[in-house]
Image (cartoon, rainbow, N blue to C red; front, top):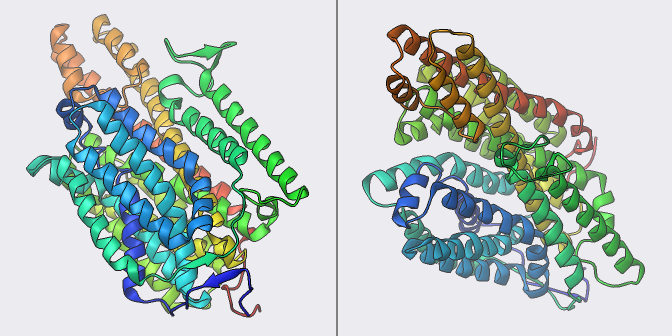
Length: 539
């Protein structure tokens, strides 16, 4: 019986058009995370700014999303999930249009980082709730798998889409295309069923402020780790008491999150409406699903950071060919997300998640072994197939696991928590992979040239300065220019270039090693995943 406090639209069995509409929304939200990574220099030139300025815009977009995801989920509870979804789409479209027309960095920041970030914070938690409201319990694993796969495929195809647009048209067409996609989504969104609460809970403004500030400060610290250093500050990086500001920002963020949780507990004790009910965080199944989401996105974004760099820098592929070589990952990801719930509807979620984690681990290890400057597509394809299958297996289960852990009326709050955790995992995964890669590359390259007496001192000094400043890779072209300017002999040039090639591989192996280690750690948390599908009787 429907509680008197809730007014629900009739729930359909879940149609293909509804699923595709929600998946398109997830695809759009994820696309901006990777589509401009291959076009940063071109965008910077067009809006008359620096590469650092564009990287700052990308960072700010992630930051705004991370800060507003949980409050965005609460907005869906207040005004209705469908309305929040559609309003978010309109805000996002306004941001995309502003970005497409932006003549300078301030307008780019306003459109891309702020408006699109706010739109995403309304859309993504609503998608989680709308899947729960439009699909019966037994079909949710398939629906969540499709939605999650759409986001991961967007990240994988982002460099290819950005490369094609920048090479043959303009990067601005990517954002113009997003506006058109939003219009299509809004047309089909009318078929989505909604669930609106007749009660009007009070808005926890202080909780929203503490939550946004805590997540924002923590994620900002993580995003600055490459530039400032994790613990030991890099040259000219801000520090306090000899420790990188990254540590202090992360500690400040954790303190604010602790104060937020204490405040939420106090509201519950006073019988007032919290932003996030503390009991949700004591739910073993929910926290297990959220933890696995964290590790999934940590590994996923780390792979999407490392592999394109390997293909484009180590193998020298263009942006287009890099995108094509990543396609096998997208194929197995989609196949696993779609087919596992269809072919094995009664499979144990815990078993599927563990298989997915093992596939991620195996893919990372095999890719480490396959890394070579002369590797071909056939060598790289096998580990990418494994990684894609692992991501798809996790995507097919985790959404249903987290939402089924709480009543449907809390699905929007779960969506906010889920997307905050995935943003956190993605930020840490990219930062960890990047910092370890740069650290290993730097030490390997400097060790290779410092012991070679034929390499001129000027070249060694230039390499130290470039790598210490945070340059991810010292390209062969940059190194050759420095060697020629220093008048190095052919033997010294060859030795330095060999050291650079080996250092790149060492850096990439180090990054993959930490991702493989994260997969192993994730296995310890799979015991919190249930052994039966939602809505089905236990063994």
